[in-house]
Amino acid sequence: MHYVAIFALLTACALADDHYSFSKAVGQGGGSSYSIVGDGRITAIRVWEVYNNYIYGFQLCYGVVWTPVVGYVSGEPNELHLYDDERIVQVSGKYAQYIQSLIFVTDKGRSLHVGQPAGTAFNMYPTHPDAELRYLSGRVSGPPTSFQAHWAVLDTDSSETN
Image (cartoon, rainbow, N blue to C red; front, side, top):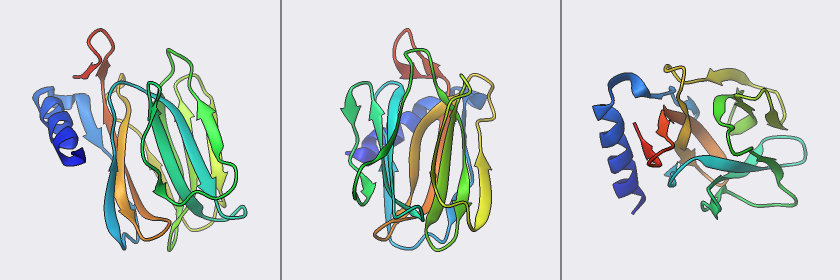
């Protein structure tokens, strides 16, 4: 099911020339692959961490629908709820054996910082100035071991990706 949605998204994005981009995957990449994708704009993010250390799990919300959790849930999540006209335009962090930290930044200058800033740094952003974070992919072996961001321009009139 997720592969069909991803294929549809990639097909639509490929037809839109430079309106789609993806950031190079980071992390060691062991374990099973994952893709978090949904309909419409991302409206919230949840991230769980292990005792101010590495990222234990994360989840996206599209509209009012939360995706399945990638990784594990433990304790209270760190959350960022976006405003109606707000979009995620940058993801940064650090990685080692697992994804150590994540920073999600919006076009309104708000951000969510989770995890311990230790390891190799990464910074992801779209190539098109109107693009936003559309979905995430990578690998997970318990906690997430790799991370990749996918960006596209969202046509808010029809809720389809250009």
